[in-house]
Image (cartoon, rainbow, N blue to C red; front, side, top):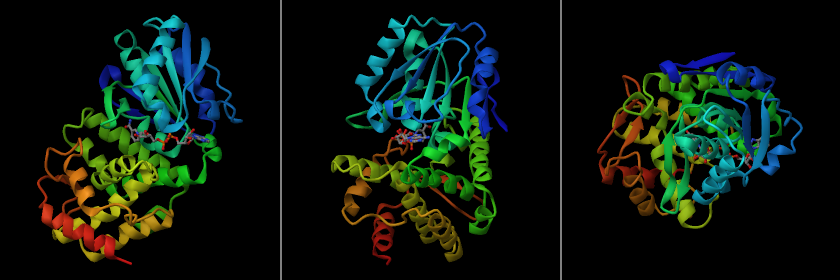
Length: 349
Ligand SMILES: NC(=O)c1ccc[n+]([C@@H]2O[C@H](COP(=O)([O-])OP(=O)(O)OC[C@H]3O[C@@H](n4cnc5c(N)ncnc54)[C@H](O)[C@@H]3O)[C@@H](O)[C@H]2O)c1
C-alpha cells in the first residue's frame, strides 16, 4: 500500500506492507535516476539482523553509527557528514537511513546539510519510525539543552515501512511505538472497540495515512500539524526531567501515553470532555499495555516548569486538547489548574 505526502515537487510516497524493503532498488531508480552512489546509515545492532538484505542498484557503502538515541549527537552528525564527503557523494547521490527514529533523524539531518542538501530515503524499522519519525521531514540531533534542538526540515524522497522487520523489535520498543498509534487513533475519533477491531497492519496504516495527510496540508507545523503533538506537552516535560535526572528511563511512546491520559483529564477539567471520553483514553492505552501514570520520582513543579519551556509552547502552557468540536491547540491554560490536575492525576490509584 502507498500513501502520498503531497508537497508538489517535494512530495513522495510512503510504501507500507510486508516485504516492501525489496522495493528499495526500484524506488531509487525511479526517484534518484542520476544517483551513482549511496551511503546506507544504520547501527551495528541492526546490520546483523536477518532482514538486513538491501539492494540499492547503485554503489553502496554501509556506515555504522551508535545505536538508538546515542546516534543523535552533534559529534556523530559531524562525523557522518565527514564520511559522506570522504565517500565522495555528489549532489546526485543519496543517503539511505535504515533504522528507528533516531537513525532517520540523524541521517536525514546529514542529508539536509551535506552539500546544502542531498536526497535521502528512510527505511523505517521501528513502529515509532514507521508511523511517525520517518515521515514529514523533521530531522535533527539533540543538544545538551534539550532534544531535537539542532535540525532542519528536509523531506525524504521516499519512505519504506516493511512490516516484516518489526518482528525483531524488542517488546518494549514495540509497545512504545503503539503510543503514537493510539494517539493517531484518538485523533481519528476511534474508541477502544474501533482500535481492537483493526488488525495491527491496519492500525499502522491508519497512523501513516493520518501523518501523510496532515504533513501534506501543513509541512512546517503552522496549523494542523501541531495537532500531532497530542499528549506531547507532558511527554516532553517527562523526557526532559528524565534526562535531567540522568535516568533516561522512559521511551518517547511511553511518555506520550502518560501525556495522552493527562491531556484527557485536563480537557475534562476545562469542560471539553466527559468521563466517558477519559475512560476511552485509559482503555485504549491499557489495551496496548502502556503506562498511564507519572512515575513517583518526578516532581510536579519540575514538570510544570518543563511544560512551560517546551519548545513547542510559546512561553505559556500549551496543550492539544479534545473538545466537543474536535481537537485543538489550547494556549495559555491556567498554571494553577494544570498543577491541580497533575496532582489529582498522580493521586489516582
Ligand atoms: N522526526 C520526527 O518527526 C520524529 C517523530 C517521533 C520521534 N522521533 C525521534 O525518534 C526517536 C525514537 O524512535 P524509535 O522509537 O524508533 O527509537 P530508536 O531509533 O532509538 O530505536 C529504539 C531501539 O530499537 C532498535 N530497533 C529499531 N528497529 C528494530 C528492529 N526492526 N529490530 C530490532 N531492533 C530494532 C534500535 O536499534 C534501538 O535500539 C527519538 O529520537 C525521537 O526524538 C522523531
